[in-house]
Figure 1 (cartoon, helix red, strand yellow):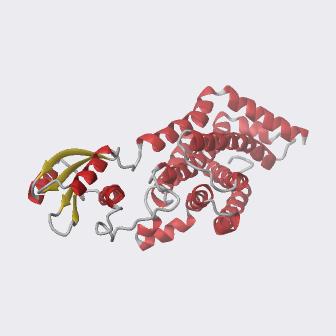
Figure 2: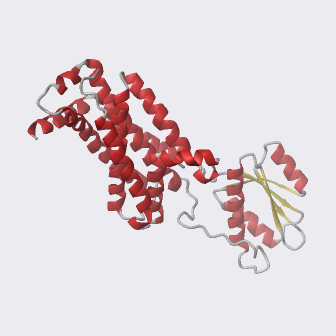
Figure 3: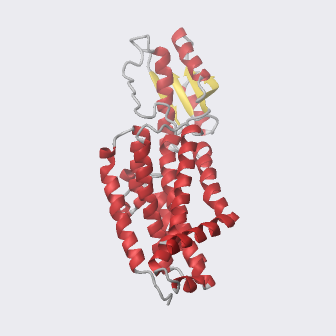
Length: 354
């Protein structure tokens, strides 16, 4: 046991001495959290809006003032006909037109639909803003009834933060573990380690332990940033959030060990990590695009993508505040994947480095 602890201490000192590794381990999560949380956002901001009305009644004036006062809309013009508004949208001078009909008090939205998702969001925001100003009038907008659960402010960080956690923990744990072991192979020091009194499997596990500790530290940093920088709630049990994350971290470490069995050089390990992990995590995990919207064949492929289950569990635990019983399917799936990958990785470890 003392020899095993010595290997863990040796690997920990090696990691701490490598400033580039430490910069990647802690710098990349912070930069990506800030990038996805603030810069890459689907929040509605400064929508260029045209108001179409033949006459400005007190009711219409109140609605326009609410739109103008909102941080979401920027009133760029007031025109008299829908054709004038459509012309401005087609010439890229506006994004949205709000048409106040002279008869029956009706309202029509003309929107640039080049991006359907954003167009839907613009329309929803405009409906809510106008409905707030016209709500006291029972004859106006009576058919509009919108209720948003879990994210009433429609902040994109609520959606992105759990996804970022799944991506970062997978990439950092798997990539760093695989590169660390392959680096020993390249330098020829792995052969020296394997002829030591410690069993080869213990050597491999000892090299993974420091990354497990570092990944937990990174998880703490991510959760603190999510809560206090990005304002994402931790509605569920913090204990279960951490425990499920540890299972996922162990899965990522196991995948890194498996990649190290195949790769002969650090470059190959890096390329394998990027091809095997980065694209599936971003495209097929539900991070950027809903799995339900994908073609059926891609939905079948997502079944073997571990981040899909972790991201789903984190969204439920962090945002929805459900109990562990509601994410038991995801937890069981991640546990089975972890055991399977770890067993395969350790079994296939080439003791002679042939």
